Image 1 (cartoon, protein in one colour):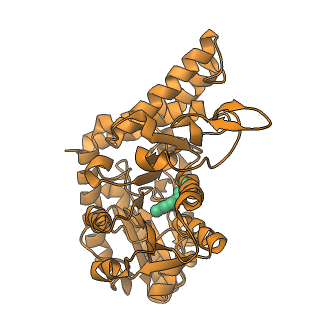
Image 2 (cartoon, helix red, strand yellow):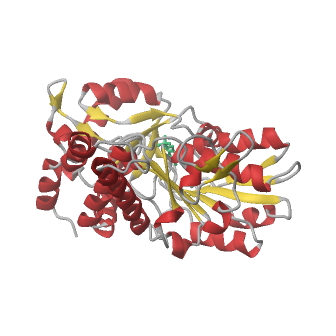
Length: 408
Ligand code: PLP
């Protein structure tokens, strides 16, 4: 269990947190957009460029072998973190978005035809909508959307009723980036598998906050981004079951992903390299693995427990704000909180909070269909990480009170 004194020590690992903005202590509550980086992660990047920078896989020389080993060790660390069977099931991408585009293109090429259907939910991030829409356009297919109730809970019976012989894949978020809702993905996958339909889980907002075991979930594909879990930008993960990845064509062509090339015919490399065309971000992957090890050292269960206590505290404290409406209340949630206050535009609240040193996100959070569903222009969103504190929440609530008094 994490205590105040542990948090003080943890905060010292994140140099960015101890700075002042507008002459005030920075309060960073925008962790769902991206998390801050501990010093060891940034040092790992520096060390990579200063000590062993050389292109990987192709070199026989010392530095190239060092870089290759570091990159492949990083792949193993990722596999261990999400409890994948083997490192070959891990494909490095630029992030969640690229991982979903990869599957939408490649799975679409192999398994989807005119009239087929993809099922997703109303609470998806645009990253888990648009690539499927593009596939639907390309192949004359249809999107089906699982509805939610006013608390942000998926209607599972409607979901199951939607499945039929034309359903090719379910693409569902593990945790909503707007509502914080933890969806019952294990149950969703179990239902899909009863109909022999594979499931892609968008884990961008889950991996930083809750323990993820892709084997236990039985997910066919699981995707997430390094920068949301204290790692660098530009690195992410596609986990896929071998039985699917083997049968899917490459997403991009180029170096690394080939076995042989002639002008008559190209044969493709084995997994995972078939899906990693070009020079990968081998410095980033190693720093990403360092971030996962950092999280592991603190313990994802302790992180979840601490963040839950913070969120409960914030929910309680926010009750003093007049006309506040929390969007999404399912009980099962992470540390993302979205709200509206009366008819004040979220943007105005965000701008004024910023001037008081508090970083929150405002707007549609790349989930416009969800905003349409709730019939709102956007929300103010706070999202806590394990380096945030109750004192910061107190300062934030006092600042919000001030802002509301000005605007309401
Ligand atoms: N999916 C969810 C649920 C997200 O919250 C995000 C980012 O906010 C993404 C996908 C896209 O992640 P990235 O921009 O790192 O590719």
